[in-house]
Length: 209
Ligand SMILES: C[S@@+](CC[C@H](N)C(=O)[O-])C[C@H]1O[C@@H](n2cnc3c(N)ncnc32)[C@H](O)[C@@H]1O
Image (cartoon, helix red, strand yellow):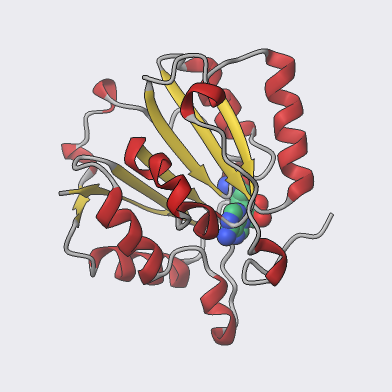
């Protein structure tokens, strides 16, 4: 399977119809967490099974991984988990899909693709335009979690989010995990690899103010 796809490719301009929350989830009123670049969805499945009082939505640009994620969700028969295929920016920037951002309580960007070459930075998922859309539409108090093993990418993402006046860094000590979704309860696939190779992890939480 291809490791990287170019998110700016014309192939991702056309987006699939996103069902309503009622169609996606057993109980559409539950808090909603969005995982962007969820790969085959193992991390979200673990969370969804462990915490049935939240809904979990994953967006992934590699179609084969989304098919695998959907198969797994069907097998475990959980109603609080849903996967969408496509470029997350194109999906969430579409007016018909703004309802997703309006209903989100937290978003995770776990180990996004680093796109190391400078001319490819525009392919990175976190961009000022994207953060601007999120800042305008997310409810106050919504959280953004970022996590990566690439320091340069961390600095890049942190600079973009911190430059937006609608987001403030939330320090770990100020974050009450017991009241909220705990994204650190499970490790993502990439995180397991990073930990087993003793690489550094750079992470931060932001709150919409
Ligand atoms: C390095 S992998 C990390 C996967 C997973 N989050 C983890 O931590 O194991 C990054 C994932 O983001 C996906 N991705 C990259 N750009 C994307 C975009 N614009 N929209 C949706 N998914 C994207 C990639 O296909 C890939 O599966």
